[in-house]
Image 1 (cartoon, rainbow, N blue to C red):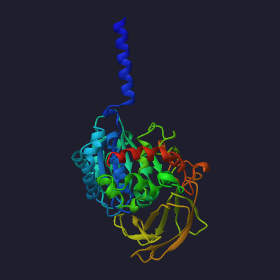
Image 2: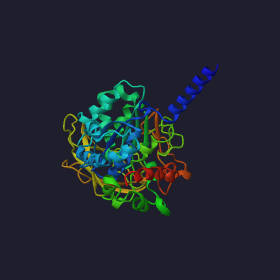
Image 3: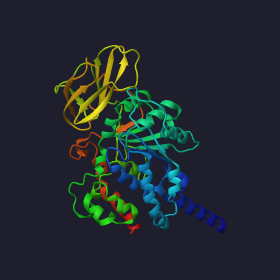
Image 4: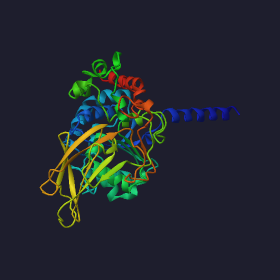
Length: 425
């Protein structure tokens, strides 16, 4: 009996170890798709953040994706810094992956946005998503999308069988604006994809409400980051070190809580089911009287000369706020432009095109909160496993819907990160 009791106690200890110190097999399988080096330098900050927690993940891929001038070399640039800090990190936790191991899974994704149909040609990155998703595993593959969703759209187009193997956390908002065509393709054709679409929740990471003490955006850098290791020295090159890191909620989402339950409180935000993705289609130029939900896909369909079959070459550009978005010819004399308003307000736009019949057309519209708004005939639905920003007014931070579901954990996740920066002193 005494021997049996000892065996039972040993089993109990092993169970506790398994619960509190999970094996590498229990670590989330992760691919990061990033536009690092592209339109916003915050991806450099978030990649440094991710690498400082790389012991917590099975990193299966780091993909350079649209939009902008970002390329694979920008990921490798940060991995070179990580390699310099690797000995100090590994001295604290042995599970940190080597820089060479991470370089081996760093891939180049698409160089340009998807055309109007939402997909184009496979890239090294899209093929890698497929390869990883098809591996035999009892775990899903988490795809953290920090830039355009184009490579994911291409992978789903080429291999729809991977749909149920994926868990996607998409930092949408401005990234959705730059990949509206790929987004609408995914939403229309993969209603059973498991997706978190964070259009504004992510901003709870960097809205500090002028926080006093060491946890303000500038103060945190000065207190905990500046000069600590190669990564700490580089961090100051982006926003002068002030925390932006709009993609980092995808990282903290996998660090704390149950990621399979998006409605639960979590460092990376909590979300509500999204049953329809708002869309508005206009067969005319719009006016300020035309209201659309913020973050909705807005489409303008114009008539012009018949150019034969549809093709993927841009033939028009919608210009707003000094930014241009390609539009395409769809056949039968039909031309279409898409845009996603990333904020509430009044918008003006103008169409430029070598096609005389549509060149110079212009208009305005108004985007309103909350997302996704009331159901509309133009919406993309149903969405069966989609989650998005909580519209509860109490969870707004300023104009940012759902942001408090991240912001209320600011002290916890920043203090946790500060401990790791101390390892690099």
